[in-house]
Amino acid sequence: MTLTPQQIRTQVMDYLEATECSIIEKSPHHVTVKLSPRADRMLTDRPYYWGFVERTGVVPETLSFNFVFDPEKYDEMTNPSSSAPGTAPASNPQDSILSRYFGVAPTAPWLGPGMIRREDIIYGSKRLRQIWTAAQDEGKCLYLFEEPGARQRTTLFSASYEPWLGVCFKVEMTCDLKCEQLNFIGISLASGVIVDHFEKKLTLGSLQLTPRLPENVHIKPYEMSPTVGTERLEAYLTSKLAELDYSWAEEARERLRLELAIIDVYYEEMLKEPDEEKRLAVEEQYSRRHKETVWQYEPKVTVSAITYGLFHLRST
Image 1 (cartoon, rainbow, N blue to C red):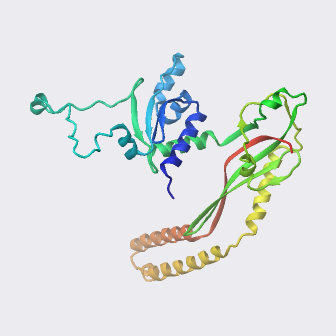
Image 2: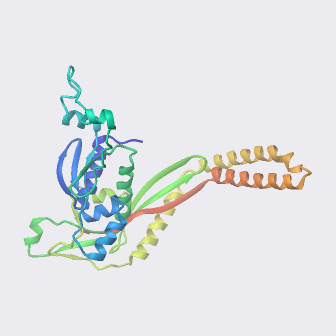
Image 3: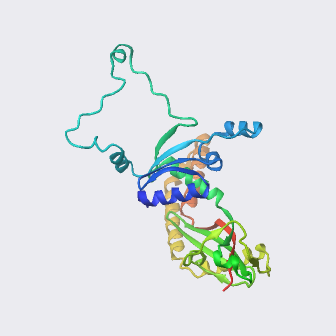
């Protein structure tokens, strides 16, 4: 799996906009941004500075970055003459008489308020993983409302909103191989209706979501609590998983049986060692190898909720 620079740019821009960062400059290949306090806390790893801000109450100075999504095209855009044929290479500013005799002075890192440091954000980079982790941590629990539009705010009657509990479950089927799948399921806390592929309902048409309760709307009363809704979603997902083909698990158990048989044959003579000290060491090694093989080949199905929330959508 990989992501194109454009896909990475879309994800990073979504995070920067969601955390209310200030965009200084942007292009298809980069974005220059001044982080918001919220994003700075998550991305810059400055706990001592933010502790100082909290103790003293001073206005925080957040850092600025130049995030580059396509380094090659960005360099061509910013330095078109450097790639032109026949262009003389730029002279090194430190290539002087003093540097020849006293050495080259190291360049100080470009950090601190007012400074803008370039970072290439490509698939697999540390900063991209950090943004994904921050987005996952902060977006794990949601409480959103459908944006009704300008016309609803001026109409006489308020719009009826239906509360939905949506949970994105990650199902991991593992043995010596691994398969993952996402199941985003929603249940109406007013009617009890369960909708599979709930993400399609949230992205239908031009649906916009907001964390603020819109004007001139009312929420239908809950007929069940979120706890009861969660239990019903878990039961629904369990019934779906029970219908799957688990021949892969039987095949994994057969491979496990063969691997354990090989281990038994390998250690059979070694376990007959007359020297007690050596035999105890072999038994420990045999037990450890046995447990590792069982852990590797034993089929397992693990379900976890990676994101969830209450979504208040217009009744249909």
